[in-house]
Image (cartoon, rainbow, N blue to C red; front, side, top):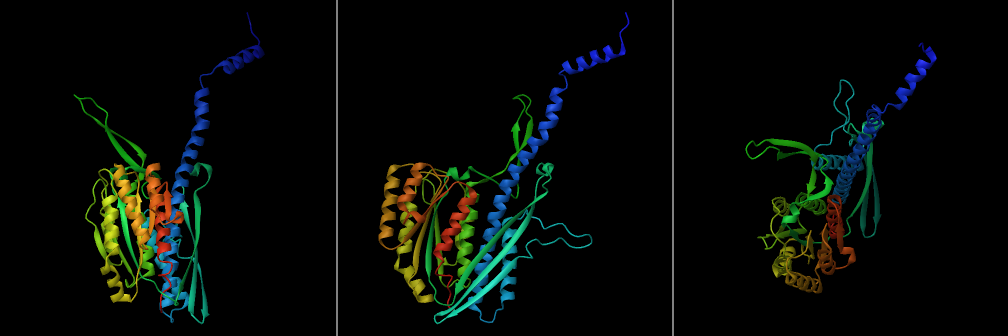
Length: 407
């Protein structure tokens, strides 16, 4: 029996229409690029937030340094101050984010420094009581996206910030600050912040058997651990102090760390380098008991010798601060009671207490809220960026008067 050409084509089309064999491949070809692009955007958004924080911190430190330089040197020009601010900002940013790259070079020339063209202004004001200098810096950084985001056509995103600082020849202020820092085992845990300098890490595991061991690996997100976030945060705070007191004549710092026991502290000294070195060497381990550490901080900062040190060098009675940080809660209720008693005694004696809860549970948060000198002195940091921001703001508040240097 003969079939017509038309009926044959119709039968072939019907068979193809009913065949589902290729549907999975077609769906995968459509969905996979979209899924990859979405993952790429998530990674880039996280990195963009971290870069913006680093850029903002660098710009803030730069304008503060330039404003202080103008207050100390009547002969410094606006251009010289802004040039100093740009160089300071670049050095700070590329040090904090060593993985950041300069822009693509024009053929036959060196790579373009993206931060070199930062726009700055200086405003000078005079009054009967002295002079003030306002320095502003606006800059941006083009961050290359990863290959997955590029599937959507976005090869780079621009991160921009503006920073302003004021210095004055009107007054000066001395301060002593004691850091009380948690180094317990939970400080070795991951935060929810991916390391922008190295977003991936290789994880190795045993994929064999007891009689035939074999090592396999896979790539995983590389998160900043809590203790490293703390080190970055303290570096941000000390930068504020150093910028306000470049000659180390007004600022004295000390620190103590604790887990289930108190570790030997680093004693009060001028400037911050000794304190920063102490913090950079911290290792996370053990339980949590803040009572002895807080008592040591209060005892040392209250000593008459601390007032004498300032009197002999700058002729002032210093403002005194304790910065108390934890990521957990004490293992014993008595530790809470003793810590809180020390906080109350310190506050009654004029010592201002800042507290920082770093991804801490409710019990730890409650202790820190009670210890703080006020609600504005309590910080609840839920990720690495917020911790750095909290310590930076504490530094800003502590040196607000100290940045008004006498010329």
